[in-house]
Length: 118
Image 1 (spheres, rainbow, N blue to C red):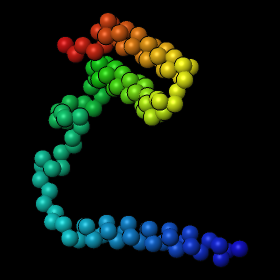
Image 2 (cartoon, helix red, strand yellow):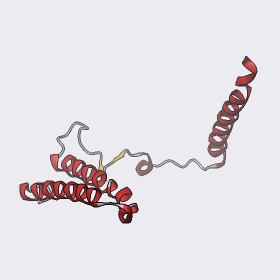
Image 3 (tube, rainbow, N blue to C red):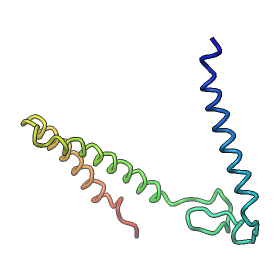
Image 4 (cartoon, rainbow, N blue to C red):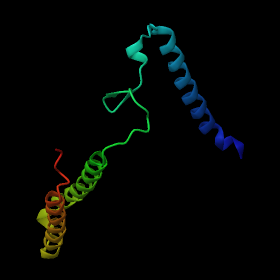
């Protein structure tokens, strides 16, 4: 029964050996010249000059959520576009309803000022 696990253990040993070997090789080959700017923490394009718990503007989160929502919505259109020529009226109608709901949501967000940055 254990003979069946031999190839899996061999692959696991090879992967761990290769990963560890490349890490050690990279550490040996590269030059280590740390300096202040290189070792400084970098977050979101801002220098770390205040407390990490400083208040964040809600618009960052709002824009990120809106991007995810509209990006996912457009991802649903690709399979539909591939089979567009084979679709009957029900397929085109359902996509029209889907796009109309998407446009209504976009107009709502636009009117509420969620897309305004200033």
